[in-house]
Each structure stands twice: as structure tokens, then as C-alpha cells.
Amino acid sequence: MVILAIALAGGFGACLRWLLTAWLDDRRRRGTGTGVVNLAGAFALGLLVALTDAGRVDPLWGTVLGTGFLGALTTFSTWMIETLEESRQGAGSVWLRILPLTLAGIALAWTGMVAGGGV
Image 1 (cartoon, helix red, strand yellow):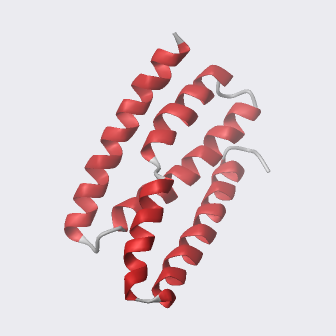
Image 2 (cartoon, rainbow, N blue to C red):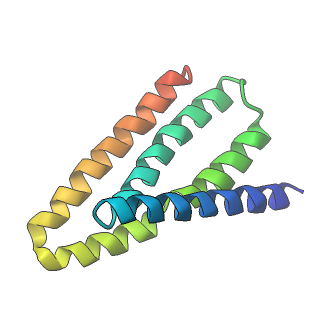
């Protein structure tokens, strides 16, 4: 039953990711959507972990939402491919993509944990 719940949550997360990235990439530069969903997911997972650790979210729901929904919403592999594609413009542009998104992701995960009463 847990596997089915993770699969369903993952399906919702994947569909939401596709909708958001398609919508944002149509309005902004390609790759914007991936960055946004990854940063939002970092915050949401930090919040979920803190709430689960504090006993405010059932560990089973933490697993289903964290692994299923947020795991499918965020996408490390797409970010890597987009980064490699952008690297064709020069090494400097790669670091302008990697460094800010990585630091922002860590900051947002931490912020989410603080908001959830952790850290």
C-alpha cells in the first residue's frame, strides 16, 4: 500500500513539474521552470522533514510526500542536462547557473526546516 501511495504522489508531482516548467519556460528563458521547481521543492522538503521530525506529520506521510510527490516534482537530472546545454555558451555561464541555484537550494531547505521548527 505504501508503494502505491508513493507512486500516486509521484505521479502528481511529475505532472505538476511538467505543467510548471512548461508554463514558466514559455514565459522566461529555458531552464527557469526547472530552477523554480527545484528551489520550491528544497524549501518544501526542508519543511516536511522538520515537521515529520517534530511529530507534526506522520512518518508515513513524510515518506509518501517527500519521496513520491517532492521527489517527482524536483529534478536533478534535468537540471544537469540543462546546465550542460548551457555550457556550450562558455564555462562562465555554467558557474553562474550552478553556484547560485545550489546556494539558494541549501538556503531554502534550511529556511523550510526553520519554518517547520527544526534546525
